[in-house]
Amino acid sequence: MPTKLNRIIIYILVAVAAALSVNLIVYSAKQCIVLRLPFAASLLIGWFLLFVIPQLFFVWYLYCRFQKRDIPKATTGLRVDVFITAFNEPMWMVKRAVNASMHITYPHRTYLLDDSHDSAYKGLAKNLGSAYLNRDGNKDYKAGNINSALERTSGDFIVVFDIDHAPRPEFLDRTLGFFNDPLVGFVQVMETFCNSKENLMAQASTQTAMEYFNISLVCKDHIGAGSMHGTNAVIRRKALDSIGGYQPGLAEDLETSLSLHGHGWKSAYVCEPLAPGFSPATFNAFCKQQLKWSRGVFETAWRSVVSGTFFRLTLSQQLAYSVRFSYYIVGLSVLLGMVLTFSCLTILEAGFYEGFLARLLPLAAATMVIRWFMLRAWATEPDAKMGIQLKGTSLVFSTWPVYMLSLVCTIARISIPFMSTPKDSGFEMNQWTILPQIFMIAAMIIGIIWKIVHWQESPAPFTLITALLIVAQQWILFVLVWQSLRKPISGADYDRTRKKGGGPACSN
Figure 1 (tube, one colour):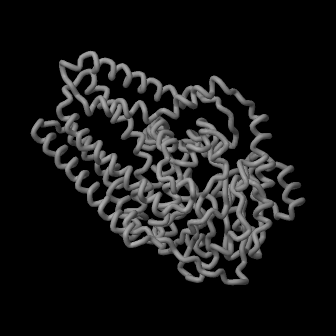
Figure 2: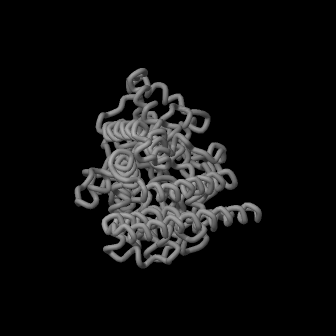
Figure 3: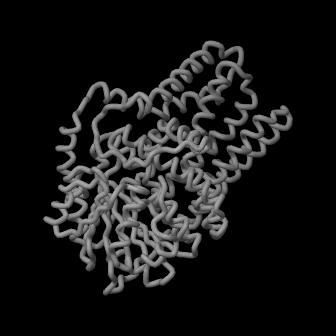
């Protein structure tokens, strides 16, 4: 449990950061009025409402409510079906997942749900003692696969695993106890990744999720707003039936969670590493994953408002879901920051922007300190307890074009096909994933040089510092590009390496 001193410290840090953020907002408003900048005012208002307030104030609200649950003892005699969803996955990975699920100690039945219609999967399931289900076509993809299995099974509780996650034997013993409360609709278990030592990319992509699964979801759980994440979830069949089954979409897990909460079902979160999986080990795979997730989250946010589901939530749940909905606007924030900084380096008078940055930079530093303290004080994973995830932060900043593409597609109502996260590796990088970043970084470097050469004409120290930080913040992109040129590796070579496991946690 959090200590009293830790709580006092986080309250103080949040109070300081809140004062800094109010100072920034007041300054921006005054300058827009004095300088008569209606477009800038509209832009700032939109940015504050859609990104800053949810990602700062709402997050701080959650942080101040951090508290882990006690794990209740599981009731015996429950009927449980374990679903492992598969679609054109490596055979060794399918075997790992099925084998691990078969060894869960609580009595259950394991089903391999094959959407790729691979006869080899059927033979594997038979050899391991698992049941095997497939269907005609791939309607609604993963959600459709689960709903098809629901029609042909009878367990009162459903467990969903992605193919790269291998549960530990005690998985159900640590989750089923929450269903002693008849209103609990689902239990989400912490997502952890056992391949972080595999390469730089795997380590960075693992870090991008550490704060969320170690801290944010614990906080959301405490206020009754935990959500499912596509795997490591136990769901009450009666709850799924009440909403018409697993909800389809690019973010089917979020759609289903939102619908369950909107219908009055409770949720629970277990912050323990009970089913380690594999994080994306290439930049291409990470970009595809983030494109699907971000487009799905934006679409879910839009639909929840239009359908009224969002307004059926409690106020605390609305705040928690707003944090999730607004996260991927980070892409727009990075792009706007680069465009404004470049403009003030080369063209515009930087007076307003200098004052804005003089207040923004301390706020950014305070935000980082708060995040660092939360992880140091209360994270579960040893790596998360280090508090600083420089690789993960750089990776998120370097992925801004993906989030921008997703946002544009959402606004323009352009659909994105359902895609599984690639399980391959190597160092190769597609041009579409790096060209926008390279172009903007080159522009920033030109702007920095221009400002230094013309420093006497219009000095702008905060603008220059921000430009240097923007370039430095995307350092991981340079490393990954260098690796792609220096260390080509074939998919077959990598697959043989990964089969051996990314470490003890990956072995079964």
